[in-house]
Amino acid sequence: MNREALAALLAREAECTAVRAQGAGGQNVNKVSSAIHLRFDVPASSLPPAHRARLLALNDQRLSSDGVIVIKAQEQRTQARNREDALQRLLELVASVATPPRKRIATKPTFGSKQRRLESKARDGRSRHCAAARSTESGGSGSPAGRATMRRMAKDKTNYTCSECGGTSPKWLGKCPACGAWNTLEETVAEPAAATRHRFQSLARSQPVATLSEIDAADVARTPTGIEELDRVLGGGIVAGGVVLIGGDPGIGKSTLLLQAVDALSAQMRVLYVSGEESGAQLALRSRRLGLDGSRVRVLAEIHLEKIQATIDAEQPAFCVIDSIQTVYSDQLTSAPGSVAQVRECAAQLTRTAKSSGTSIVLVGHVTKEGALAGPRVLEHIVDTVLYFEGDTHSSFRLVRAIKNRYGAVNEIGVFAMTERGLKGVANPSAIFLSTHGEPVPGSCVMVTLEGTRPLLVEIQALVDSGGPSPRRLSVGLERDRLAMLLAVLHRHAGIACMDQDVFVNAVGGVRISEPAADLAVMLAIQSSLRGRPLPRGFIAFGEVGLAGEVRPAPRGQERLKEAAKLGFSVAVLPKANAPKKPIEGLRIHAVERVEQAIDVLRELS
Image (cartoon, rainbow, N blue to C red; front, side, top):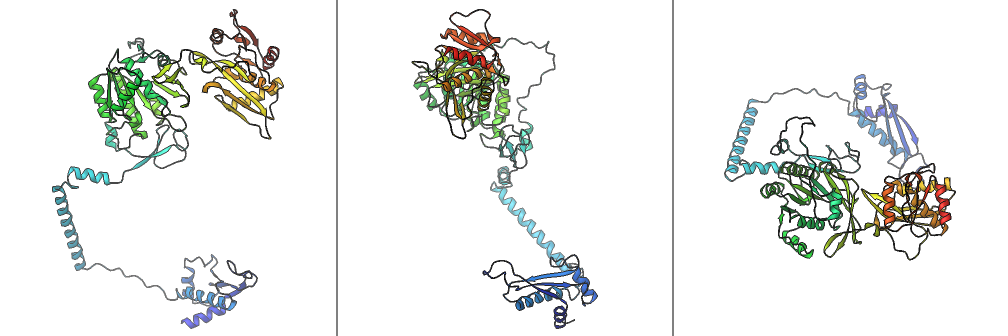
C-alpha cells in the first residue's frame, strides 16, 4: 500500500472529535472547540493483518491497551489545521511499521581486522612498559614514592561517624543508627585494614586470669595538688595512672588552673606540660604573669602522638597535662586532628600509656556550642574522671564540677575566683550565692542545696507580675518543667492561683540546682512575691514537694541545718522527716508535712 492510499484510508476510518483547547492562550482560548481528539481503532481497521500486528506490537504511549491510537492536536488555532496535524501524525506512526524490519545477518571479523587489533594491543603494551621504566628511573609511580603518591591520588573511601557515640554509617543519615542522636554524623575517611590491625600491638599486655580474692589490691594513694578546691573535686588529689578529662568554654581558665597545679606539684614530683595550642614562650609569659616559679616545670610544644609518647617514656613524669586532646594526631590515622577517629584513638593510647607507666594524665577537651564535650561520647567512658569548668566569662567566679569520678564523689564542686594572679579557691562559697540586702525583700528565699559532699546556701528569687493572655514561666538555674509542676501544685493544694501571672524564678550567682530539695523554697518565694511581703530575716527552707501536696524529706538534712546555723540563720521550714532530734542552738525549726502547712507558717511569720 502506497503512502497516498494509506493516507486516504486513515482519513476515512479515523474518528475526529472537536474539543476545547487547554493551556496558555488568550482570554477566549477555552471558549471555542478548536482542538481535535483523534481515535483510530487498529483491530477494526482495514489495514493488512501483518501491518496491524506490527502496529499493535509498538511500545508507544499513544497506543492504548485496547489497540486504539489516541492523538490530541491543539497547536493550531483552527479545527481544520488541527485535524490535518492529527492525521499527519497518525500517518507517520502507521507508516513507520508499513514495511517489515530487516533481519540482521551476523558477520564474523575478517582475518585482516584481527591482525590489526593484535598489532595495536602489542604496540600499546610496549608504550606502557617504556613509560613505567622511565617513571621508575625518575622516582615516578614505579618507585615506592611514586606508588605512595598514586595511592594518595586514589579516591579515599569515606564513612560517616557519629560525634556522640563514634558509630559509623556508610551514608549520611539524620539520626545516628547506634545511639539515636540527631544531626551528629560527620564525613570521615575510612581507615585501611592495615592501619587498624596492629595499632595497639605495642601497648598490649597479656595478664593471667585470677579471682578477685587472689588479686593484691591496696587503697588508692592520692597526691594533693596543693589547690584545695581542686583536690576536693578530684576526691583528695591525683591518683597514679589516673586519667582526668576537663572541659569548659574557651577562656574560662582551664589552662590557667592546670598550669598552677603543675607548678604546685613540681615541688614533689616530675611533671610535664604538653601544649598543642600554645608555644613554650607563651606558656612562660603566662607563668610569669601568674607569679609562678616554673623552674621545675618541663614543657613540650607538640601535637604528634608518637612523639608525645616517646617523651613520656623518656622523661617518666608522674603528672602530665595534654592541652588539648583535640589538637593531637597519630600517623597511623589518615583523618585530620580533632576528628572523631583521631580523638578516640589518641585518648585510648594515652590512657593505655597512663595505666602501663603509672603517670597521671590530664586531658583538656574542647566543648561544643551546646556546652557538651567535643568529640565522641566514648571519650568520657575511657577516662577515669570527667570535670566541667562552668561559669560566666563576665563574672570572676568559676565552678569545677565532677560529672564522673571513679575515685571520688560525683557532682562535687570546687569554687574559684579569677584574680590577677590566677584562680584562687573560695573558702566560703555560700557567700557568692547570697545577695546582700539591707532589708528583706519580697520574693527572696534562701535554701540549702548539696553539691557533692558540700552544703551550699543559695538564694532563690521569684518575681510574679501581671501578664497578658499568654503568661510566661521562665527559670534560670532551675528546670522549667518543674516550675510549671510546682505552680500547679500550689494552685491545687494551697489555693494560690498564678494562671494570669508571669512567673520568673532565678538561682542567684549562676548556680544550677538539679535536686528536688529546692521545691519548697521556690514555692515560698513565689508566694512571697505574689503577696508582696518579704520573708523574715534569717529564713531558710528546703524540701521536695510531690504532686499530692506532700513535703518529702531531703537527703542529709542535718548537714544542711548545721551549715545554715553556722552562717547565722535562725528560722527554718523543712520536711517533718528532716526535723532534728535535738534542738540546734539559734535555729528555730518549723516541720511541715504538706504544702498548705508551709504556707500557713509563712503567713504567721510574715
